[in-house]
Length: 350
Image (cartoon, rainbow, N blue to C red):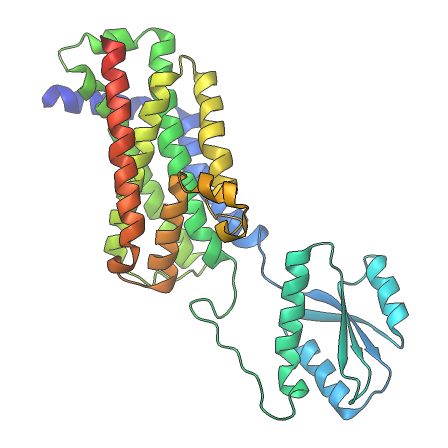
């Protein structure tokens, strides 16, 4: 046991001495959290709005006032015809035009549809802003569960957790082991008194501890910097995250058995981890909106289930019983990947 702890300490010191590795491990989570939390956002803010008033009646003026007072819209122009408003949109001087054609003709919206998702959001926000004025009989009200402010950070934070923990644990672990093989020092470690399997586990333990520290950093930034609530049990958030970290470490060990050089390990990590995590995990695009074939492929992408579980635990505040399916799948994947990785590792030794 003392020899095992000595190997763990040796690997930890090796990581801590490498300033570039430490910068990646702790710099990347902070930068991505700030980028996805503040810069890369789907929140509706300051939409440049053109108002077209053919008849400046009381109802139209009320609607204009509501748009002007809203935090979502910024009235930049007031014109007298829809054609003028369309010219402003085509020249990229406005995003939305609201045409008040009179009490009986209603309200028409002209929207820049080059980005369909944002166009739908702008239309929905504008309709919600003016709905009390356009409904003369029974007003239509809307109540948003879990994210009433419609902030994109609520969606991105669990996704960033899934991406970072997978990349850091799997990629850094595989590169660390491959580096030893590339330099010819792995054979020296394997002939030490410690069993070869314990050597590999000892190299993975520091990354497990670093991943836990990164998880704590992300949760603190989410709560106190981005204002994302931790509605569910912190205990279960950590437990599910630990299972996911073990899965990522198992995948890193598997990659290290296949790759012979650090370059190959990086390429494999990029193909096996980066692109599927970003494109197929539901991080940026809903899985349900993908073609059926891609939905099948996404079913074997581990971050998909971790992100789903974190959104339920963190944002929706559900109990562990509502994420049993995700936890079971992650646990099964962990056992499967670890078994294959250890089997391949033993075969290589033989």
